[in-house]
Image (cartoon, rainbow, N blue to C red; front, side, top):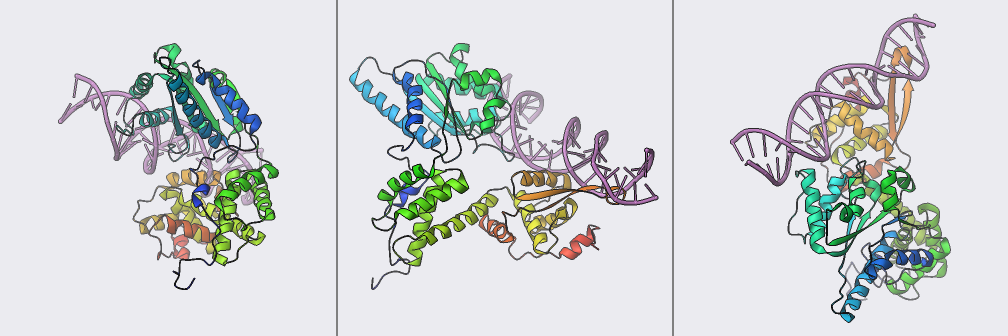
Length: 429
DNA sequence: GATCCACAGGAAATAGTGGCTT
DNA sequence: AAGCCACTATTTCCTGTGGATC
């Protein structure tokens, strides 16, 4: 120990932190035997050089959909490669692309077929040519089909979070049929849609549903026992031996089942966070209390992060509500929020939106669960209006932290709420 | 039971981005 | 350089409405 740095902990529990990251694809998928068999069967035609089947995967987040897909496509790619090596003259081309539709959704949450097409083109072209918006829709689709046609063989297109593809089904309809319609000649296209929204399937137009849902694979939530097995396998490689006990693993699994609908991701995060907590505290076996502390930290951090992920207007609005909340004016009407919001926006060097414009963000924040809204009606005297307050899941501190995290310059800004409300003609009783 | 407040929230207009085509 | 297309974000304009008050 002697000359150790202040950054050094007395104990080290985590052996390989990389195994806890999002990018890490496990070397095998545990506890998913039934599902994996279905999935493998769905992909077999590709290996055999037959027309691919389209597939639709659904199940809650953290239940292995994406992990299984990554894993199987890698395997498939490798298997086809080695098969091609053994069968010269009968090579089978295989390519896959993966696009997460959520990342390319604009502020309101739904990505258009247009955006998805652009993302696919960018993914297919090796970084080289990039384009964002501005092309005529037809051209974008043309580009996409040109790219696909140039590749040849079989191309599997994985659309993660397909439910985020809004109204216009066009892509979902056209892609699987591209060869029949004549958009492409040399390439066989298979579509794999991934969604955690069960209702998405029934919202699809029948013709799209028939093709996309050619094979449906449901990923059930993990049970506590399964989760335990999974994180135990991970812990063996990621943590030093004898730094954790079975009861800690079961606790992580149980919490993930109870609060995050059986998410393996969540169980993994809990274990990692608990390990770090124990390291910081300087004791060696991870204790149940570390896990509970980890849960608190994760819950707090998740909320802060999701607020920090919002756009500037929404953060300013949340900040306004938080300040009104701190001043004890909790359920507060739109007009008052707008008055406070306007001051904050100006302080941040931002042009404030009109009340109507802000209102759109406000209802969005309500839908996202950051705010709670109430309908009020005082008839002849007061008329009809809404009031808002922070959701009980969100504290004033979390909003402050989120604003700090996204570096909005609101640090020293204070509001004379009394005066602001007075100016807005909202002098309380 | 008619009135009428104060806003909700729909719809259309406007501004702005980016890129192609001629 | 002008005109076009596709898309997003915001403003302006407007109608709708639930229920306390008269």
